[in-house]
Image 1 (cartoon, one colour):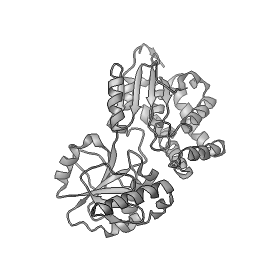
Image 2: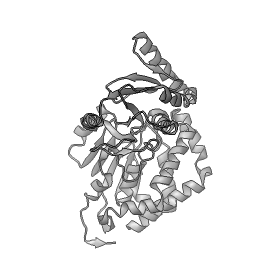
Image 3: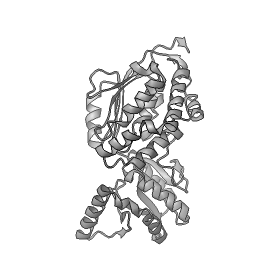
Image 4: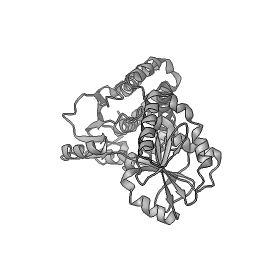
Length: 347
């Protein structure tokens, strides 16, 4: 399979998923029954993001053009993928990188998300049979050449030790943060709400903490966040909301409460489900320095303010990363391309 074949296969997959929702409707129900956090609405949102941002022909071509050596023929490597299961299809980008680079994917799905990606892989093989021997879903990773593993902070330490003898990318917990300046419009704050609440805040790109200027007036922000109050109708989310509310009341933790989230001043970037942290900043210069000290905890930054040392994306775009926005800032495709071994044959 040359690069053109691989690219066209994924373009065809995007069109197929967009035009044939009936082929996977029943699977969405099965997934929801298996994991109630994966609502049918959120699964459709994840699929839509994959189709629009990862399987768009123009975007795919522009992405691979950044890696000229992809056109060279190399002996495929067996790449073990240990996927997270915090949001639907969270491992699709890694899956795409492995196959676009001409390597073999040995996929260990999370117990929380064991059905969607295998079904999509079936569709891909149906459209491009050449991938049949390049995709394997496994229960245990035994024989492999390379590893890309995503997990918690605790599991990442285990992964680093266990896979130390092989080329690897090991990821741990990260979150998104937002910078507010007090001049945001209601639309800006509604988009921030999407960054906070999409997928119930379970994604590594969900905003878990906001930075606000001194004397910030929370009224407009809390009003807009209250607009997402229907999230409390989800039983598991409501249980977390009620539990955290009770704990904070018992411990007399000062906080704001809306119908959707509990908000408190806290240094920690990572927040629990149904909660949001905030911290005041005196200047953007100082905030930039503080964030640079916490780079290993931050997946992305959203807001209208630009920082000298960090890329800041607009409100509402945290959960729609481009092909070149890699998890943990590690260029996965470059890593895989760098594993090339025999570049004598041109495609």
